[in-house]
Length: 150
Image (cartoon, rainbow, N blue to C red):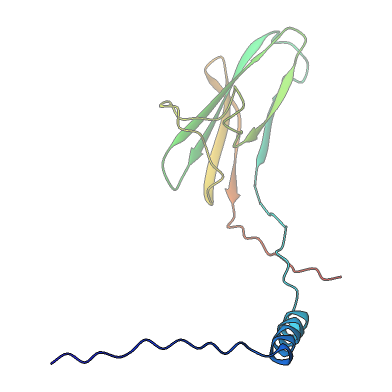
């Protein structure tokens, strides 16, 4: 058995007072709402280690300095080769170097180095012989963002 229900429309319009009351209520609610503003802070932390070599008395003339950084956590070696010209006795490098730099620390397969937490050892080879070296640790890093109000 099917029962049909007649469609009923209301022809009654809200009164002018009802419309005004509705608009005032909406304005009151919008005015009381707290203004929300997104934070525009961006934050980043990047650790780098500065390493260098210097021919203290300038006796070598032009030479090639090969920096090797070894990650104890991954076992990977990262290389950066610097050619020092006549009159240039030393060079400082940053590890890791930005991969957009034409000369950056990378593995033999071309993988760029990252500042991953862990222990590292490094050395600089001149004419295939270790000239200097050392070790360092990249710590875990974190960022805090504070909300600044007027």
